[in-house]
Length: 482
Image (tube, rainbow, N blue to C red; front, side):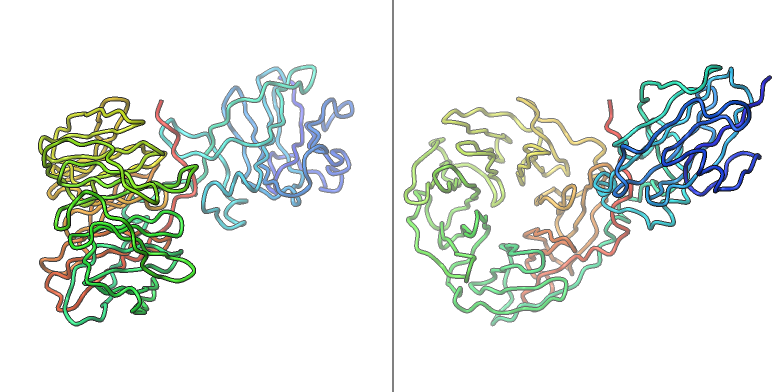
């Protein structure tokens, strides 16, 4: 067995038993990363980092013997990249040395990055199939050793992880802490409509009164200019406008910016006193709002007038959150009996049976169309099929509210709030209100979720802010299933 000793520039860690003064190694390596013979002839090959940026990179080094990762470093800022050492006892055996560069923007995709000391001191290692992994490196430089020296090799697919990549328990992600916020008024009222204005403010409607609420502080400012006799059951914002529906006034609009004010609107065919659901979005011509009502009518408002999009010519059973706008001229909506999902697109209707009564529908470009049901399940539309979301922990009450939150969903079951986070999993619902309380609206914020309630046993109009006090997202991501 021939013995050769080589040096590899990496972090300040020293590999191997042979030590040379750092200045001597630096002179040998120059500005690059060298794999070189410390005995015999001059360096036979060099991994040169001169073409790499001098800032904005974190660098790690890996050394493989016979296909196994035997030495590695942590992630070191390239500005502090220093020589270190390892030994090759048998130049005829398979050895590989690699330098990986991770750009700052790539590490930022982890959502949270450990402190610099942890990054540097935590050695990388190869990840198991189901482990949480680092993103792919932006730059790879390396090669394999032979009797002739270092030769370039095709970059391998690195699936690497680190001690700080471990996932958190889903329920430790937010660790919800409910705070009760009282809204002043002559009598307790239900809170069905809560519209987020920015990352800390919401417009809240309750019992004909309106309030601006700041979270997490719980500051309440009455908006007297929005007082009305109407009781609204749901609202949807499109741009700077909030569209509302309720039993007394079927259709109304509030201008959100620069100040809050009602605007008069033409009314649809749906009659006062009936259940209705609305949703909409922006189009090339402005806005469109669809309304789905107990009359079995699907109506479309183009900003000036109403048109009937589809008429079932029979009454239907439906709730206040049973219509989802997908794209211009494309909506999905549900009825409870028979349990059915309807998709209306460009004038055509298709209907898909549901295995349980639908309570709420939501559309998101990533999730697609989701339907929450009375059997504590959520179904996703895939083509012309409805498939249950996998690994759901639901038991008990129906899923009657869904909202996008963070990297996943918030959902309500009666008086309890739960959530789902992509790559992490589900947290079962946690009770939020008092006795006989029920959650009537979900409005997520970066710092938590604001809940409208029916006030339950509380003697005042009540909203609840479920503040996130958890550990935050894990540092790494879980690879997708094949």
